Length: 217
Ligand SMILES: C[S@@+](CC[C@H](N)C(=O)[O-])C[C@H]1O[C@@H](n2cnc3c(N)ncnc32)[C@H](O)[C@@H]1O
Image (cartoon, rainbow, N blue to C red):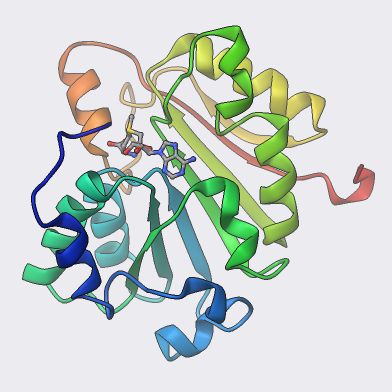
């Protein structure tokens, strides 16, 4: 999702440091202080306009949620939601997922969500896919031993690629759905893209996976 330049987005983001955390590197290993409690931390990489993270935070007040997004023009749309509605267990980060290790310590996270990640269909761009081995290595280091990775998409080819990538990485699949909305879990929070693709009749795929700590590479 790359929205057209939004006038004043950068200034708006910078003027809400209690929602979009600035100087995130300084909180590495101490996000409990940012939230004022030691509840588990779940992050969504590529949050888009924030519908999912908002819904999850309201549904799970005892979990801290961090939405990560690299475009100001998109992040500002999520920020607007949290300006209107003060939700204490949410923070946003303007960050490329590639740089997560600059602001989270090893094992600091309990869950990572990837929702409708950009598919990067060209083979030469495969390394940019958020389920590429390059990213899985990062996630494994940042997730706690019982932590897991939940990935939803409408894109069959990206889903196939991701299952193979995770399998080659020795991950364990705890649940796989090839049509999540057929019997939609009551606690499923739909993202903007999920709503859109589902309305057009596309099946939604989801995998819940964790790293096999016994066979770490
Ligand atoms: C297709 S949109 C999906 C948005 C939202 N998750 C949803 O399901 O509605 C993908 C989003 O991920 C963001 N994104 C892609 N790669 C990223 C990365 N490496 N780090 C942070 N954000 C990223 C894009 O800017 C875009 O907003």
